[in-house]
Image (cartoon, rainbow, N blue to C red; front, side):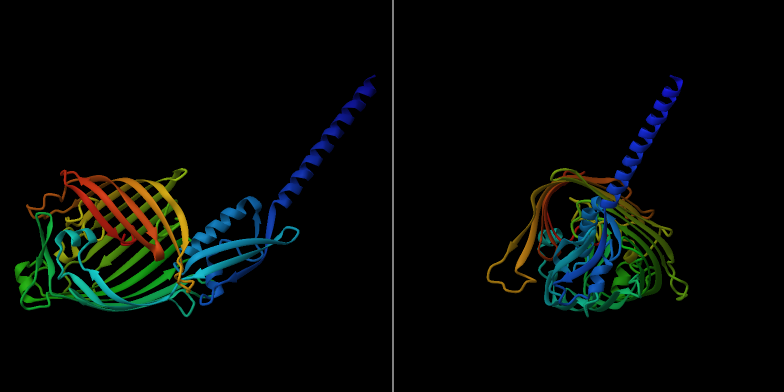
Length: 476
């Protein structure tokens, strides 16, 4: 009886071991079946763009092994990366099985039009809403510019500009990414010359003071730069930028505001060196709905190469953006930025806070000068019209005959603070928290254009409609 019991135990153990072995074998089989090998990658529609530029943005390559459950997210991420190059209007992926667990990836792109010899006719105010409110038709720029994107099919960019009118500008810039065997290096260089017959010489009552001297031009600015960029993978970028600035103003500008360039000077020139770190994993650089963005910039103004430069300063700037899908058609984002300056007393031309490149909604007419600032924007948006496409009749060119569009309704709240140790007594917004709230509509469409209409109210009870025609946060 005892021998039978032992035999039954041995049989039970063998049965269990065998069952476990079958389970492990089945699990191994499942894992093996869940793996796919990228056999080949084919690209179509790239009449101009070199294939290696497209392959650089994919999160997989020929010979890689991916899990089935990771294939669709990898394709979507690769599609987002390609669209963020701003080289293609549309990107389509197709998968075909070649043999067993091997697949071929077929990519079809619709290239944009890359050469834009465009006439310039634009407003020269700080933002479109200010231009509409002031109705100053003297602040019109005209001229021509040439933007040649995807130059030579390598995602290089060549820009030449001649702008006349309110602000005269002559500039030339060239950038080349994807250098080296692994396409991790990039470089850019260029120069810019501007002539202004009118200048914002000061800020009083929270408004920029415009001055037009008889001995024009009021200001001439020359800037040249050289930049090196390192992008090891897809989402992290390091760059070093070396710049030279040369400001010259008329004698009367220096008399009216002796601190415009500092010390009553009519000329100020200096070198600067900046390091910038960017981590960008947003689904879109034009109008993101999901993802994360971080930018840290450390900049030294004045490198000791020009002994007469009297205002050396260290600037630290940080930007963080967080975009999240909360539910079907419901999205949230927060975008925040700060700047810290080691030098608290700077010439007026270098003392710009909010209202120039960054602004609070409902504060478009105002500027707040200062050495340090922080701004934070919160937005809850509803997708009224999902991203859609429409084929335009009577247009035969594939770069123009198919457009995309989407419409969003949003509610928002903004807050900001500017620090300045030497404010004009009339500028009551500085050294005080400012905030606003409102609602708006965003239309996202053709060639990265975003048209926005907001209704906002600020902390002083001022309210109204404000219009913006630019990519959100493009200047941040």
